[in-house]
Length: 560
Image 1 (spheres, rainbow, N blue to C red):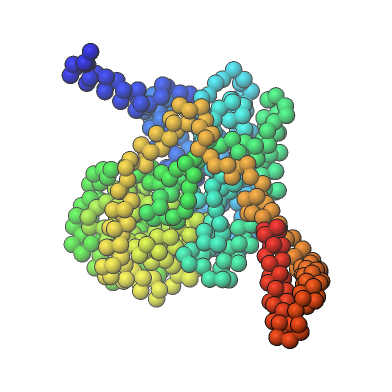
Image 2 (cartoon, rainbow, N blue to C red):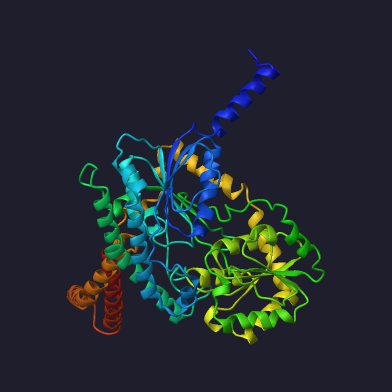
């Protein structure tokens, strides 16, 4: 019996609904206690969108959400940070070498993790054993003890990478990685590495991997056992918790970041926080609309305060801006705004992403923070980057390689290189064209970063953890992953061949010689000596050589 048109239509609609509808309302715990505002700018939009999709959210955070919907409950994490609270000191961190800097990060974030776990709200929350969660989402930022929440609630674990690519995920997600061409995030090299840079990249990458496993992770392990001691024992190790991670959402995208192989369980959602531009406040809008020669936006993010720069550095900017035809919007965080700069608009708050979308913006002077870089890419604005600390150096090197930025490390900043770089950004059309091209590549995606994030989060819920998205490399010991066992077998075989082949070949040669000698004596008894004897001797020599070669080939076939 044939279906009529209405029946067919209903069937198609029902089928599409079944396969595309979101999961039913899930109860989700989001653990993101790090106090950095930029981290919350990345994570909180994801939390709000999950709530908008009718999921019930419990959020552990230092930073609050303004006017949260009723299905978001905030558990306040206290902030007693040993990390630098004043950006004055941050302007000096560029002098810190890689390895001490790494240990400082580990130790400071260990303290941050404990600050979270001993917060009154969190301590009360830990004592409750009758709660239920379908999913735990935790920030990927060296606070691994918090992964124990996933074990407590027997829920799948998703990690949100708020910073640059963290190479540690390769081991527990089964992702292929090699330091021969992929720069480690704690080195200051990018692009085609020289032999020396590859050696340094290899040493630092392996050193950090080893010390992280045997030092930093063990400290986090001890912390987890201290604060989750009311759970059934024994508790899983941090390494076991990492191996059970279902999905990692990265704040990257190949259009402006490193192109690398990724398993299905690692998904790029870079720029997830960026929304369509909104109308600017009246004073800012008028200032930009009247900028006939264009305008420059100067902003150092949510943490660094340009007003706390040393005076000699500030003079570089003031002296340069005096002679510009362009207007400057400067995010100034200090109380006393500089005077007598008619072409500069100072304010302690500015809607950065919306400003960068204004058609009169010609350049962005930035510290190279991840979110700032992404907003510049999204709006197609070239960057003059002055990296100060953390991942900013590497961020700027990446975007510089795309042709849309000039990079000046803060410690090398002087009036000459700043004026030269700013002049290049403003007057060399190649920077603007490259910025627009990178922006086109970034926006040419099948789904928005937010839709992509929501799909994969709900995918993990639908498929009860979706552990099948990880490759078999997770279970491989290191020697199998690097083919050390195969190389060892080749080495042993070559060594055996080297030592025994002379003996074998000598034995084969003697055996052939004996057999041929006897054969020739028999043949000689039937023929007269002369030409035939000479021919037989030559034949004996040829057959001996052939037998030796055949013996070598036979031995090689046995060994290999």
